Image (tube, rainbow, N blue to C red):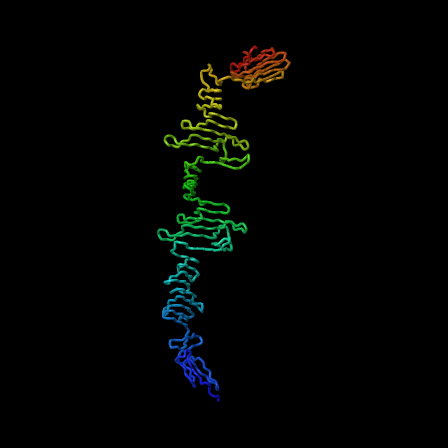
Length: 566
């Protein structure tokens, strides 16, 4: 047997409040411990029996109010009067809870509820009284700031999200802010709408931004939409479309697109052809610097277009020039060009161009004062002919004063009492055609009463001209088939040394005349072969043998020639 311990055994609490020495007997509380013996050895173990606190293999132990180590299936730690950490197994089978909450309440400030058998939903609650299966993040007075419902939809500012991400607030400042602090030149921040389709096709919409509000009945309605669509899905040559669609009679259909940006068509306004969807561009002071009136199919520049014209250009009174065509092309065949093109089946007398000039009369009525126009005279391919006319108003009606044809230029084409004059640099009348008296004056305006027959051509001053001489070397000159009018004023000189014969035209008109002479020997006979008489008879022959003398042949009446004797 061993001798007693030396020094004697002392039993003392760690804080020094209780101690005992010497100790010969060491006892354990039967409620908490058990002692088992084996020979001269004793084993002290925690006990699960007795009237004191106890722990089992499935329990968590902690000191209780009796300063005993007790255990249960739940773990609850309370600090002070109202702060509590609880880990427990709820009465519902398989549902475990981790919660930070106020003591003595079921309202969890933070709570996790987990299922061990898969029959109940998992949830994390941040706040109070959050329905199972959802996750809520709360601040102040149990106000939910973010919420994830049981189907995975996230609400920020709402506990009833209606989309995968639903943001709701009453703020009137920035609602969504994407901020990037990178100092490089790369694109950021970026907002990407990506439709990850396995079968992309033409006309597929790949993203839409909707603008919604309420109507006066409190109903949620669309008021605007921006949408993107595939134009061409070919790899390496993809084309897209972007639509801007304001609501039209409650619809935001593509047909209402006010603007379409198309990779192939460019920018298109009002592609749907809405009658009341106009297009307007403002300048600094003009609200209608450019205006497309959809309902009237007109365009106005500087104002609202008139309904009876396709393009209406206004002058606000501050411009010296209303329309200017200008080019800086430095080549001989390039210049500002104004083209009129009537792209329709051609026909004779079709007008293909007109420039009309209007003004107000003294009763403030719109009246036409002039017109420049072109019409088709011959539409045959490769031999086309046109006529251009210049008209001015006379007594309220347009008259064609000047007509440019392909073969004839006509002044006073309307046969009106319209004179024509050409002035010299000093203002004198070089040529003056007086339509009223059917006379032409040179160097002055013609008048009546100058002679018994009121000559049609009147010359103020001297008139000189060279004689038209036609030399004939043949002994026979036959003009019988010629138009007598073609011979007027000409002198025929016959130079043959043989006997010569000169035959006059077989018909003539009063006033026709010509002259003839011979410079060679053997004489000359002037002959009429039929039709017109020559000195009173036909056929006849007049012999004029003198050389170097001029004989005049004059038509004193229709088909009556008279030849001088020398």
